[in-house]
Each structure stands twice: as structure tokens, then as C-alpha cells.
Length: 356
Image 1 (cartoon, rainbow, N blue to C red):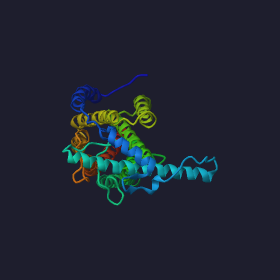
Image 2 (image 1 turned 180 degrees about the vertical axis):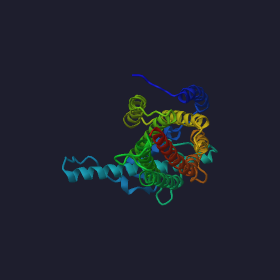
Image 3 (image 1 turned 90 degrees about the vertical axis):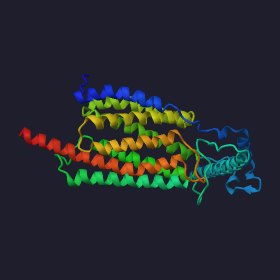
Image 4 (image 1 turned 45 degrees about the vertical axis):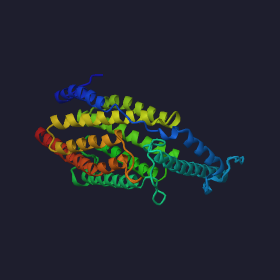
């Protein structure tokens, strides 16, 4: 198979490799995400709570259940089993939360700094929401992506001319549709997970975020290198997709390793941001400045994820602030995408007119 890259793509590739190695070297330091849950006193507290359903005088109704009831495969028994599993998860969540609060009070008396538990800082709940600030910002991100995706769809199929069969002239139309779907899905699970921390919801949140990052990287490479040939697209898409799927399976079925997942996500994000940065500087796209602003803002926001800090007043931490920074950047990104649709569509129509 013969692969053809334009002079612009070749120039970008050389700059891209050098810049990526430089940026990646600056982001290699990752904080330890699970110091608290390795604490023997915390683990003992959680274990005792799950056994008796109480921490001191605090008792939790959802901890009063039994899974040893010999349930068979009858649909009603399966539903009952799922309900009991949910209660078990809610019990574990309450035990972890209050054991964490008690342990942090002890650490505060000893003048020790707060630590993370299961990859998360100790937060104060509001109306049952475990991380209220992250819930609010995640919901706004989801709404912003849905709005951007809907306006992109309207522009593509209702405002611009279409080819035979009502197909758009824009060659990347389907790719951005998938991006919109994965973005809304990822922020939906972010809302759910930050509302209530269950193991299943945590895996869904992490898996959705990894899938979005991996796909975004593929889309970035295809658009920035202007790859339209289907065979070349498959050649790029296949190994990256295989890696992302393998990583997601590792998180779900082997070990939910917060440190390793952070390194993988940061690496994919750095690759993506570096590629867009170089493309913005050499492509002469009319809306290059919008994308460059998104890249710079995203890079600065990513530092909040890497160099984390405890939540202020138990509510607002670096992770929540990172969610806040992505809201205006999401609006600007979809604005660039719509500009790109108009730019390439007009370019292709002009080319078709000249060829007649």
C-alpha cells in the first residue's frame, strides 16, 4: 500500500515529533492518587463498617442486606440480586465516605495534609452529591457539547449545499458526529459518577473519558494531516483503537490503576494538543486562532489535572476547576469545527466550478 502525505503533512510530522518529546518530558510527573486508601486504619474502618453497618453511633440502612439467599435465574430474583448489589455498593460508598472523614479529622489534629482516597480528595457532600462542583461543571460541559453538536448538524444538513444523496461536501462530517456522541456520553457519566461514587460508575466514567481521548487523538491526526484515503485512515485508526480498547479492558478487568491511567491520558492529550498547535501555526486556516486558543487553554487546564491540590472548603478542587475551564473552550472548539465545515465546503465547491 502506497501512503501519500502532502508537503505540509511532512513538515508537520518532523515538528510534531520534536515538540511531542519536549512536551511529554514536562508532563511526566504524576501525583500519587491513592495514599489514603492504603492507610491501615482507614481500611480497617471500612471493613468493620461493611460487616456491622455502623461507624461508632452512625449506622447505614443500606448495609443491612444479605447476598447469601440462593437466588436462582428467575427474572424477579435477578432483579432482586441487582438491587442487593446496588445496596452493597451504596453501603460501601457510605462506609468509605465517613471513614475518610473520620480519618481526615485525625490527620488534621496531627497537622497532616489531606490525602486522596481511591484517587479522589475528601469532599463535603451537598444533597447527597459527592462532588457538587464537578457535577455542576460536568453538566454544563455536557450541555455545551450537545448544543455544539446540534448546531453543527444543523449547519451541515440544513444551511450548506449537499451532494447527490444528501451527503455533505465536508469529508470529516461523520468523524465529528462520532466525536459529539462520545463527548456527550463522557460528560454524562462524569455527572453521574461525581454525584455518587460507585465502583461501576467509576469504571464507566474512566472508560468513557479514555474512549473520548483516544478517538479525539485519531480525529486530530486525520484532520491535521488532511487524510482522506480510507485505507490510510484505517491504518491509523486500527492500532490506536486497539490500544485504547486494551487499556479500557485493563482498567475494568485487571486493575483500576489511577497513576497509570493518568499517564496514558496525559500522553494522549499531549499528542493531541501538540498536533493541533503545529497545525494551527502552519495551515493558514482562517479560524486557526480559535483552535490555538483552545489548545493553549486546554494545555493550561491539563496542568490542574497533573498538579492537583485539595478541595477548598471541601468543595472546589483542581479537578472541578479543570471542568470549569473546559466549558468556554468547548464552545470555541465547536465554533472552529463549524468554521472548518464552511471553509472546506466552499473550497470544494469552488474547485468543482473551476473544473467545469
